[in-house]
Image (cartoon, rainbow, N blue to C red):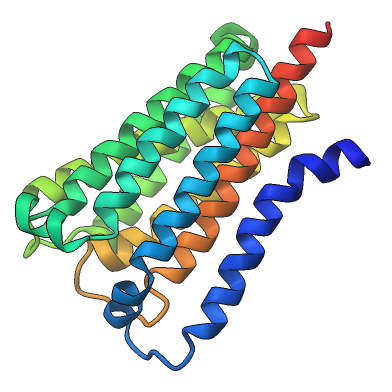
Amino acid sequence: MTYYAVLLSIPLAVVSAFLIHWVTLRPVTTGKARLEISRGVYLGFSIQIFVFAVLLFYMGSSVLLAPLFAVGFSFVGDWFNLQFPIAVKNDGEPLIGGILGFAMAQLFYISAFFQLTSWNLVYYGYIPYLISALFLVIPSVIFYFRVYNPSRPKTIMVFALIYGLVLCFFVSLTVNAYLVFGGYWIYLMLGGLIFLVSDAVMGETTIHGGRHPVWEFQVPWLTYLIAQSLLLIGFFLLSHTMIMR
């Protein structure tokens, strides 16, 4: 019990602090105004998750190096997605940098996944392939109806679709692995699914560009912080299990 309490302490602190921050934003009635107030705060939360990843790496094994790089690239993606004025001035479309940063993050998570298991152990029979296919096809359909916006730059739309497919493939890996192995793999599955929720909300708001609810950045950020924490905890526990064998 003490071991898990220590492991969960930083994520719980980050999420609790975020919820308190969210309450303070209630008087601010537009997503854009909330973003301008919260940019520095959210980047601070991103740094805290990175520090958590560094801590777990030094407590764990070499498997944690890939997740550490994943969180590092996520931090870069966060900086672009927060649309700091310098990013808007120099890049014009900072969301492209954000998408690329998170695409690299997912590739590192996939790399870490295959350090823990192999394709043949997870993809046995037709069901895992069916699950992966559904995770690729259904989000693509949702992307067309809820995210795609012909008035937005084509580069953003193309990059967002490619990133979504990479993310969905990773999530399908975590789901299939949990169905095969169970146990600590549930942390990766939940982390992946919540990550998918976070990016789906951002997709139909910020990426789409035509919908800007007041919670446009709070819902994606809260779910994102939870997802990153679960993924890091999952990789740590699974790598620790490998060392103990």
